[in-house]
Length: 125
Image 1 (cartoon, rainbow, N blue to C red):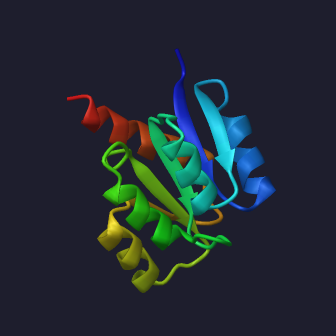
Image 2: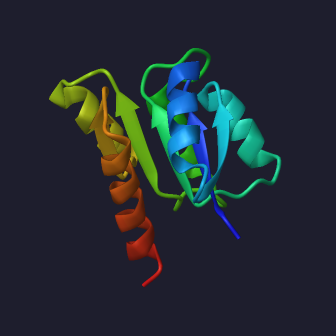
């Protein structure tokens, strides 16, 4: 059975790139913002990992991280943030709120894949 990867990003191009790259190994579920993603998770869906954008409408990345990490069911799901923001302050904010990693756009999908696998491998010990 495939693992489930939740992609939270308001850019259809990023959703498509991630879906195409990961679809052989994961069931890729796209959501347009943090609020829609939390609603989907609260509806009882389970995920193995999450890739989320920093800047989104309705509920941005930092707010999504806070909500996710206070969720009893989903607080331990590996989470990588993607962002066009290179400043240390944005990275620190995300990591402080509970993101497991932070990658700057444009990104290499292979590197993202390896980071996800390394995180999930650590959880399986």
